Length: 441
Image (cartoon, rainbow, N blue to C red):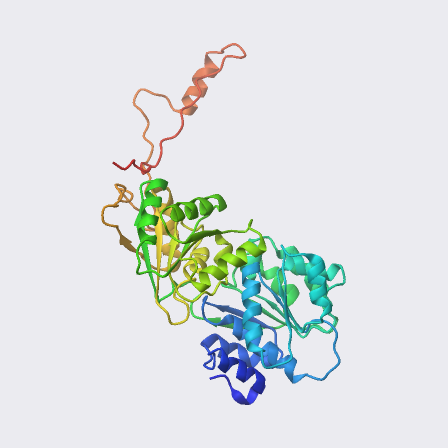
């Protein structure tokens, strides 16, 4: 339970109304140092309750100081995506419903004139993306002079998206009496994180819940081999048509592919839509809400949806494209199996993606279950030989008898003293790894 003696009654009512009376492990670990005003550095698995871990103590500190004169935001939350910003704001609004705290969302893709009007209402809590928040600071529309707490959520994802400069620039607008800073990240060993930590935090309490790399234990992690992209599309249609799954997220590495797949699924009679970063804010919001409410059953998304989205009932995540890193895999698969729910994550793997999938499994210390769908089994069965890492063992190139090496050819050419302008034969391309996708019959 959240410690009732330390929390404002209005917060306790908000927690009870939203069904969050029982504190998770990360919430219990963060609460004490955060309530004491210490900076906090948090690393915990997705779905562990990190949002309330920072919102509860931040809101408590504001309410404990209620009555003091103030102008400007008291809590500022930075998020890497618009979707996560809206979700955090929604959680905060529900948490503080019984209190006078006001919450506003400021992100890119919305009319700045309207957002300046939002900030003129003098909200205590502002949630948004770094680029637009920095613009509002520079235009004097966002006042941080009384800021009590700054939260940098999904810090590693911000750096992956190239937001480091904006985050550091926002720090320059903080008041001289430095506010409390809480930074949350999936990994605290991200290559660019040290600069942000150095500039933002002062002697932080560090909270790590669970191993840094671990596949979610309440999710079945599986992989299906595929011969080529068209075969993947057949596999996707078969999986999406399985009525055991109520809500499905399909991840791609390219925006164009997410749109194509959503169109294919709609043509097959499935309620589907695409979700990616080049859609307008309103369109992205509409798709997320439709999936949440059950109006959509399948959403084909780029990695814009991989972080922070918390939608009840997603019981299947499909990696149409294998993600490019183990951390990205964790965030994608973490959209299912939220809290204590069960989920399934299936990756479709072509020959060219074998080594990437092997790297992800090694990174997580897991071997994902190998499946095959009836009637759609791939001819590709994996590499003939694998290394200890699980990656394909490529063939060593053997010299052809009677042919000279490249160095020998060069020496022979030089010794013949050919006239200028007459060159040797262009060397042929190297042999492949022997595991190119095969055409299906």
